[in-house]
Image (tube, rainbow over all chains, first blue to last red; front, side, top):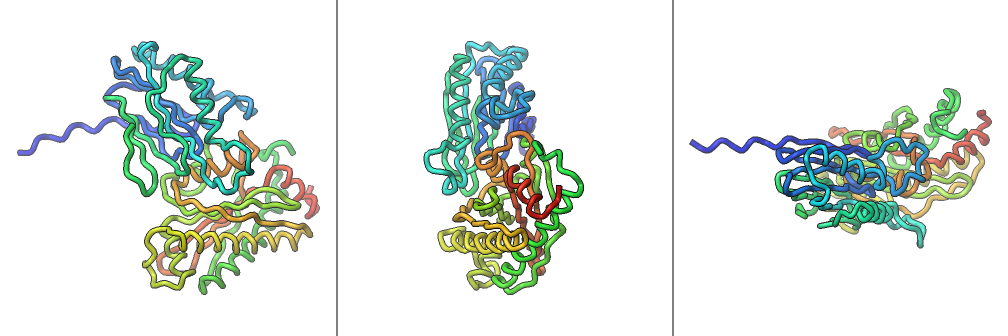
Length: 168
Length: 205
């Protein structure tokens, strides 16, 4: 008799400008990151992690700044707080980033910054302000990404159309 | 008008009519390129929060071939031509006069064919609008990506649009007459200021 398969991990889907925080038995998933960036925080000891799918580099770019998961500057503090509630210690937190692609780059006005690049810079800044080290990144390029963040060990699987899975 | 949510019923009807004229010409062009009958839907005006953009058209996880172009001249904005990946391949078969099902990867020649299709469709659409409204509209060079629908749509608005809260598009679905049910979407994405110019040109207030 073959051994019973391991129970499938719980999947939490994070939509655009959305977030989730959870523990070891969960996988946080976000699909179709273009110029958006997924900010992922992880406490390896508590095996708790959180993800935000940020859309814009600054609150000043939107009239409606109610949703904290939409911007890095508000998403990072939100994730830290929610991880604290799950028993994580903020001094142990490490970060990973994915996304921020530059699609349709041929149509950009020369000399202007892509929204993807601006989102990456804003995410790094927000993490520096919070004193959270960035462990790994899969950012930039010209392709969209889908991300699976495994909270059992903190590994992040990244898929892009026509490419092999990248693990960071 | 400060916000797309302020659009009145009459203005939405007028936009639909404008889109119908543009899409009709684009469909004729596509029909000549593919030698097939093309049917177009009644245009729809979609208004959504930026966060909801991935769900605007079809499944956000589907891989699509998308041709984005700037619209320049008296109106500014963009046009986006979207096909499911499978339809993109079939379209390449037709445009490159290949046997059905023989297009594999989107290499240079396939990319070039799809960009050219985008060029011709958008050109026909913009020409019809130019004639109807007495304006000069110019298309930019086309840019093609083959990627997840969600990433394509959000990037289109984020990178090139100016509205960060509510966004809109004037969408027409077209069907290529075949047994496989080939369909795609054509999106007109005028900047908010250009919407006003459209209404002025066709005397709708």
